[in-house]
Image 1 (tube, helix red, strand yellow):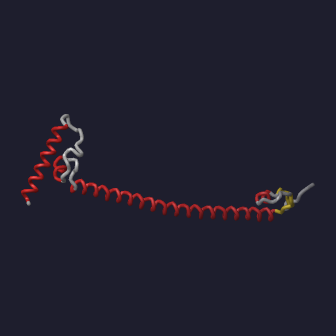
Image 2 (cartoon, rainbow, N blue to C red):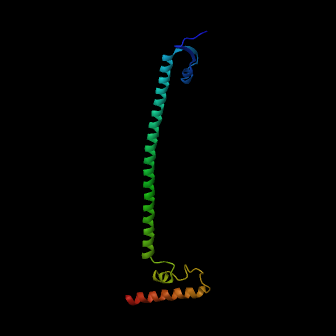
Image 3 (cartoon, one colour):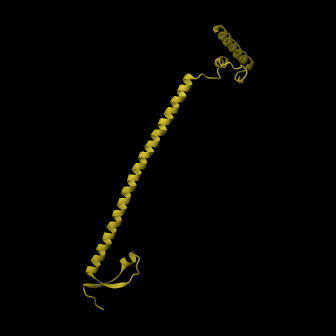
Length: 142
């Protein structure tokens, strides 16, 4: 069987590409050129769709990065706020564990006396003396 130069027999590869059953048809060069152009158009459309999806994802990533930076800035601001609060408390609120403070607030000197020294009785006696001194100052101040 001799084929003319204008007509060739091709398997319909593009039919299987589209999910159709492949078959063998007579194709002219014009038909082949049209099919190649259609494949090119479909490919260009798919590439354009993927490019659009990529652009959308890049935009979303940019928005997420902005949100991430905002969260980090808020976290740093919150930490700075609470550190400033702790500094303020440390500067203005006396240490209740100090002997002088225990005597000033009127606690019994033995209530919270930890065993921090080799001679806890001396520590308790010191706290008691400070407590008595505070009481004396308050009475003379009245």
